[in-house]
Length: 305
Image (cartoon, rainbow, N blue to C red):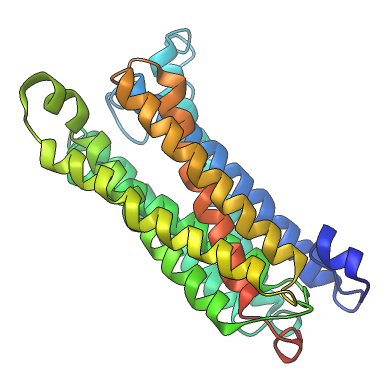
């Protein structure tokens, strides 16, 4: 394999068209999921979570055309519509994975089933979010499940590639996994801060400051873990350039995330685009670390389909 191929792309095998188009299908669902998370974040910061008073319909209709001129109603309705499309796409992915299981890696169909299980549970949490009037624990679980679903999709896509690193190191795998876990925990803490409106309450009357402070303190171990991943990645001269690019992307994203967090706190969540971007970067950082971790454990014997 030419080095330039491993730098630019995850190499595709001419032996299995099924793997190629299934992987592309997964990436499309993953991108749609990121878009869904952006819309979901916008729905929350615009206080539109209960804009549709019923569930799964909105004002008793599939398309409440009379109400869609209202931005809050449109955001909540569009969030549900996009989620429905992803639900159907993931169901199709699971069925196709089992039908073509002999042409795919052995783990692909079970992981696709896990992805569908997560989106099914996510749909239930979405309904409870409305019927339970945005109860903070349900809202936080809704975010946590969304991140797990996205993680599973990225695992499916990167794990089914035929990328073969020129060099690998087991420390990279464990370092990436540790950083990944910390980012996920930090994201859940951030979701808890958002669902309990901890920043507003702390700044206004010293309530829930501990919830906010836990999220702020969580930045330190997360940043250190990612810095160590980058340090050891660039220290290994034989490590694949693609893995080094993913490590570099992770540190760029975490620095951007910290800057967004500081800006969000400074403006007391009054600038919606900052909050939404903060959530987006968290999802992207998690995705990059999943890709890094999956590919870091690769060796030439593990890429056979």
